Every structure is written in C-alpha cells, then in structure tokens.
Image 1 (cartoon, one colour):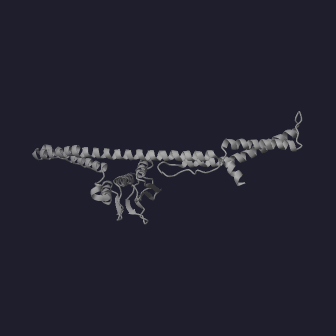
Image 2 (spheres, one colour):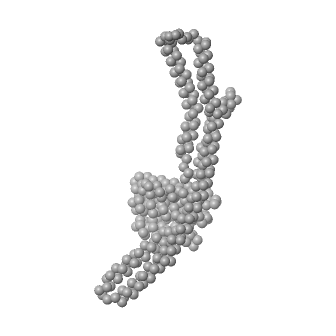
Image 3 (cartoon, one colour):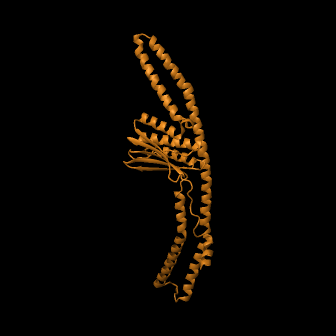
Length: 330
C-alpha cells in the first residue's frame, strides 16, 4: 500500500486526473456489462432515470476525489498570498501530493529568496543614499543659510542701534522674524542629521533626540535606556535612531498623546535588543492610518536584520517595538 501511495503521489497532476477519469469510465463500463441494465430504442423513462442517476453518481465521485487532490493547491495559493516581503524568512511548505505542488512551492520559495536579496540590497542602497543626501543638505543649510541668517541678524542689530525711534519698531520685528527663521533652520538641520553617534553614543544620541522632541512637541517624553547596551554597527545605530525619530514624530503628530515612553534594553538571553516607543494616545497607529511611515520603518529594520512590530489599541495608545539581533552584522 505504501509503495502504491508513493507511486501515486509521484505522478503529475495531468496523469493523476487522466487515470482517475479512466478508472471512473472503466467502472461505468464494467457496471453496464455485469448488471442487467439495458437501454432500448427509444429509451424508456425508467432507463433514462437510471442513466441520469449513474452519470450523477460518477460526477459526484469525480468531484469528491478531485476536490481532495486539489485542496493542497488552494492552501498553497493562500500561503503565497500571505507572504510579506517586509517580513522576510517566511516560506511556503514544499510538500503535498503531486510533483507540480512541490515544484511550484520550490520555485516560489526560490523567487522569494531572490526578491528578498534584491529588496535588501536596494533598500540598503536607498537609505545610504538618503543619509548622504540628508547630511549634504544639512551641511549646506548650516554653512550657507544659517551663516547668512546669522550675518543678517547682526546687521539688523547694528541698524537697530543706529536707527531713530521711528524705525526701531520695524527693525525689532525684522530682528525677531530673523531669529525665528534661524531657529527653524537649526531645527531642520538637527532633524536632517542624527546627533553625533560616534561622540555621544547611541544612548546619548537617543536621550538628546527625546529631549528635543519633547520640547518641540510639548509632549512629555520619558526615556529608559538600560545599560549595558550591545555594540551595534554604525548602520544599525543610524537605523535605530531614525526609527525612534519617526516613531516619536508620528506619536506627537497623530496620537494625541500626553506621554511618550522610549525604552531600549538588552533581552535576558542577550541575543536581541528591544527598542520600544510607546504612547498613551488614541491608538490610531504610527502614522494616523496612511502606512507610509510604517513601511519606511519596516524597510529600515529590514536592512539591519531587525523585526518591527506595531501594537495599536484604540483609545489605549500605540507601541512600536523593534527587535534587533545581537552578535550579527547588525
């Protein structure tokens, strides 16, 4: 029996369906030979009813057997649709009756391998280019726009001291406007480039980021950065910093939160490190429902082999959790 089952499972779907229908037709022909059933010309109503019943029975047997054999194909299609390239590593099972199913699952898994490698390569290149462009723009803002605004502010100060009473009010307004613009430019510079990770370290840079985010948004930001933290690669530190920055910004903009808690600590098994950005807001998710920021955070996590989870509870806040592997390239 085991040999027959193995032989049957190794047949292609074409031959299995052909053999099934051949067996059904042979069975129907045998039944006509060994039973007293006959068909006269013209056929009598009772004979037509018998033929119709026989055809229905044959179709029912055919449908039942085919449905059982094709059910694994439906499960395979469902598994394929459930695969998400932003959650790498998931593969469809390479088993089931029939060579086609095994070969189809194997080809799909090979395609996933290629897609994940290409997505990782392109995402890494994209974020490296993005960081380079951020630094370039921040440098130009600092070296040109910020310096020009500072010079303009000094000129306005001198003009204010030398001007008569009738012009001082206008110069005072111009001075304050210039200070506001200069402050906005400096804020943009800080957002474009991360705090000096090599000088402050990851924990210090995150503390500075949280302090600045709390002051600019008016939301209380509490930090719990438990030492000792593992040594991460520069790329991983930038990714952790950017994901924290995005999560803080989205919580401040969309969550209507009063408190945001940022926690970074090593797991008890010392194999992973957990980053959590949790708010007590409306639980609408990390971007108020548009999904763009969430996808960007997941792609950043993908480049360092980390996993991002978002737990949003309506009326009870959102928790953005990043699990970073330790002891790998990350």
